[in-house]
Length: 262
Figure 1 (cartoon, one colour):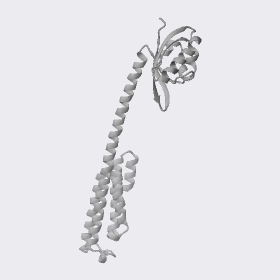
Figure 2 (cartoon, rainbow, N blue to C red; figure 1 turned 30 degrees about the vertical axis):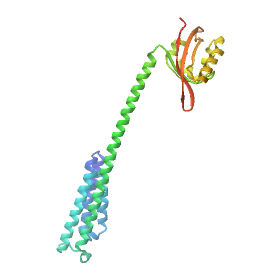
Figure 3 (cartoon, rainbow, N blue to C red; figure 1 turned 180 degrees about the vertical axis):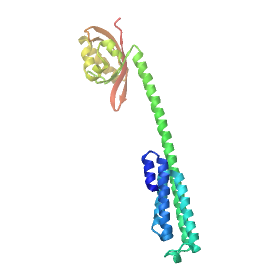
Figure 4 (cartoon, rainbow, N blue to C red; figure 1 turned 90 degrees about the vertical axis):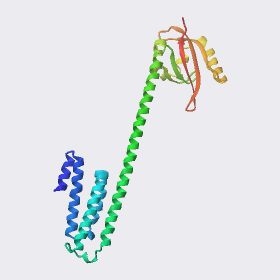
């Protein structure tokens, strides 16, 4: 009946109460079997150890301590009653004080070890939670810094970009100002590697690529000036400066473009 009640309580959401109810119900059931049958030599005694282990899982350190002490108290009471002849079973003549003491010591050791293990796991869990909170805090700071940097990039009048050098170099990033400058969106520049070269004035293409190649070979910052054809078919003069860095073994240039037509 008590076990059924504990299941109902757990099902209704009273998990803590249900856990304690199931522990006490199981303990009382096994205790009745032990007192009714063969005492500490009854197979139900092993069930008490199982309940002790379950107490740690269901009720933590408190459950371990309470159930452990109840088991030791029960064994001591049974031993006293059997020694005084109040309780008698088929093994009474073969039971000695040392048997009860040994069993009590075993239960005490299991209780102490389980209490220490749960304490250790709890401390590890607390540390893991703190580490998680710290990582979330750092992640939040990084996202905030990235948002500030992106806001700065998008607010300056320059077009900032990251790209692979050369005629067909892939563009990895370009700030939104590129749309106002050229009429092409950032997605157009990223998805079309040859767009930049194709929009340079035919008379400026060879010189621009040559200047870029020589600067990269000499380890200098490429400083380029060329005419660029916008989407509405108008040429504007561009000042293009960048520096070189390596990302995942790939040569990239990061720089800015400025309209110097005026």
